[in-house]
Structure formats: structure tokens, C-alpha cells
Length: 120
Image 1 (cartoon, rainbow, N blue to C red):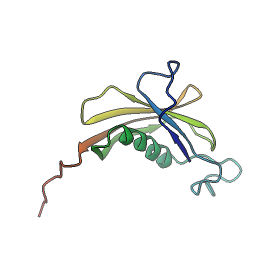
Image 2: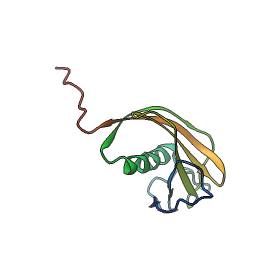
Image 3: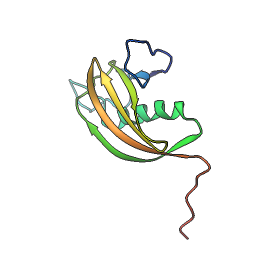
């Protein structure tokens, strides 16, 4: 898989974090679906979150607040990831393939040193 955070250009939307490609030989594809492989939504979300966290190395994911998969993604398609406005702890993101939004989601982040108290 290719993740490239350095390819933003003026033609790309504001908030562009980078892009990734899931190769045709990725282990998630056999059986998903034979004859017409599609990238599982969990893989798309995981790669998008990885790009967000790469931009915020002092932060960690605490939860996925919402996620909607809007269109299928095939292997070898370039998936651009954009981060929309949000506050310090909540990030709205989208994944775009050839101008079509394929995923919209909201995630929550926290500082690594913000460890919740032990419930015990």
C-alpha cells in the first residue's frame, strides 16, 4: 500500500492530508468479492485515520464518532484524504476517489498523556 502525504497541490481541496492506494494483492481482498474486488470500509477508514494521526503525532485516536461509506472503492484507485474543520479533539474527514466522496467520518483525538482514570 502507498501512503503519500507530500503530494498536495493547489488543485487539491483545502485540508488535503495526502492519499493512499490499496494494491490488488492486499490480503483483505480475497473473498471481498470474487470477480469484483472491493476495498472493505474498515481498511479505508484505517488508512484515513493513519494520515490524520501522521499530521498529529502527539495525538491518539479515542473513538470513531461517525462513519458513512458512500461509494465502493476498487483496488489500485487513488484515495485522497481531506480533513475538514473541527475543534482540537474532534476531526471531520472525507475520502475522495476521482472527485466522488466515498467516505465521510468524524473521529475523536486526545493527547497521549491524557490517559483516562482507571475505573477500578
